[in-house]
Image (cartoon, rainbow, N blue to C red; front, side, top):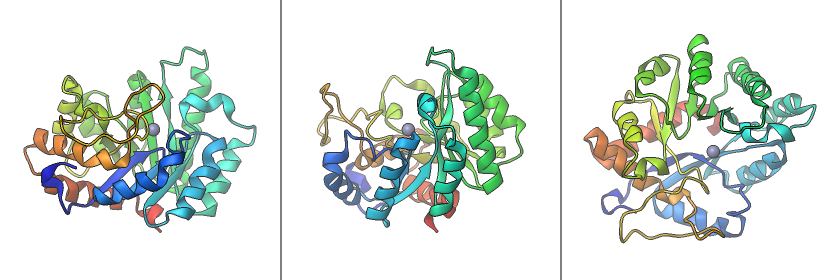
Length: 276
Ligand SMILES: [Zn+2]
């Protein structure tokens, strides 16, 4: 972890620890997260097929995880005819949020209308149940912002993970109780847009994430690297969150300690129902 991050408490707002690439390494992943001060990891499901694995993680690691269930825009093809009722059922069974849901215009599969309907149904459910929802958005900022800004302020709060949208939209999103999180992409030195977003997002409206095992950070020379995938590339994991926090502190002109305290307080508020 960064040298000035000793004894800080962090929360990983978005991860997929149910991913098969991490399965053989989970004890070490949790141990490294704890050693880095990452006290809680919010695990987002992606499709009905991985909901049992996410529930099992919550049962196995109740003090280290928070969980959400949903259908990710990449996997709408795999949903069952009963998917929305199944989602209601899994949400009724334990404290949980809704996620990962969203829009992705880069799929090129002519299912965009279907994708938007699946997203809207889950977003409406999050309003109805007053549960926080975690959102994915890639190349679909126009429809996404139109939907979010036309709705009333969210009763529990929304989180757009790995936010890459326009900086100018951040104040209007904050008024709708929408938060954003930053992860590995922020650590890439050439990512000027992410730095601008991290600098401009209103206080109390941002979180930090690993998106494990995807979107790995660019670590400084000498930082310890852990898992690599079959392609030889670094896999992301929650223990890297303090490195993201350090960049956020830099661009906001404050200390890692202040960012750790602020993001942990924001996560406790946004995910309050997941803690129950
Ligand atoms: Zn994700």
